[in-house]
Every structure is written in structure tokens, then in C-alpha cells.
Length: 136
Image (cartoon, rainbow, N blue to C red; front, side, top):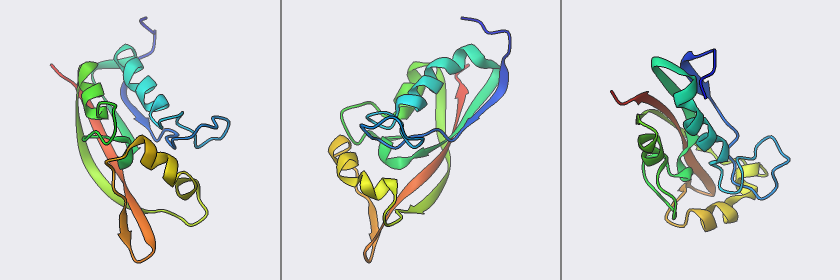
């Protein structure tokens, strides 16, 4: 499809918590990547020539490395004609009582090779800022 409106930049901080319950605003679908994958798939139709995608993605979803059976998101970007790079990394504390802590077991089942960072009894992961540009 060719929409009438195209964009120079698509910026997103999509819901990306892996969860079986999809009614919450945190839900990124069963694997956390559902909305991210829809953005990647749709971007070629909505980006102006030379446009780019900027997104914040949790590292355990397999951004530049695959931690489960799915390809990395970098590989998925590539399959849609994009070169993706990580431009920033921010350490994120997993808040006690929060959705990430609540979903830890499920996350580790989906992404068994991922290891959360720890300091004392606090766990951390990284939020990655990625930029993807069409391969010319």
C-alpha cells in the first residue's frame, strides 16, 4: 500500500512487555515484539525516501543478538531493507512490584540465553535506543 502521507522519521517507544494478557497498555504481545515487528513491517510504506526509524527497545527482546529461537530484531530490520544500529544504552532498574519483575519467569522462558544484570538484590536490563535507515 502507498499511503498519501510519508514521514522523514518514525519515532516510537512501543509497548513491549512479553505477556499472555494483552489488555494492558504494557503488552507487546506474547513475545514482547508484536508491535515492534508491525512497525518494522509497515515502515517501508510510511517512510519518505532517506527516512529513518528511531525506537527504544528492551535488550532482552533480542535487539542485536538473539536470546531465544527468534531472529534478532536487527536481522528483522535487515530483511525489510534497513540497517539498524544501537545509538544509546540506558541501564534500567527492575522496579520491585512492577510489570517487568512480575514477568521475569515468562521473559526467561522466552529468552533463555538472556541474563539480567544484578547488583545486590536489584536486577537491571538495558533500554536500547536504535536507529534504522534504509539500505541504499
